[in-house]
Length: 219
Image (cartoon, rainbow, N blue to C red):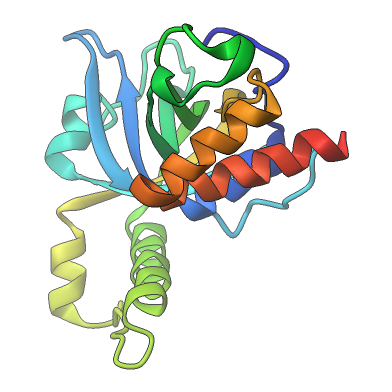
């Protein structure tokens, strides 16, 4: 993504985005050409959380997808498989009709937050995959069905059989490019106008704009 210091976000912000927007795209470029697969991604238990520590993620793919990504066989040079993992948060169109003052007459734009993560990929063994699946189910059951949520019994033969159709992945982030573009380059009057329109049409994006404005003010 085009660099702009106004929009740059750091490692703590990336971790927060991962926690808030877990449905991600996993992209690789095996010999047969580019492959992209959507999958839920969480911060792994191995993630230590410090700014100086690498971000560590966990997810899974269906075995057929893993095969398309070339993950079922080691690379000949002994290097790890690598993927881009793309996390996208709130986003939406911004009309120039909302611009005021000196900003009037400028072109439309799209406000968004996104992190593109370059990752080394570790393919997990069967037991570690089961543990990853258990954590994924537990996480989303707590989020979406807290009163009647189910648990994945990883000792159940049926569940173990189903899990054989998936491949667990641990992803260690080696580099990232992340930004939160929320009209920080516009005047306060224009930002207020954009917020007023987004409050009506895209409340999640309006909320992220307010947080971005608070961050700029604090800096």
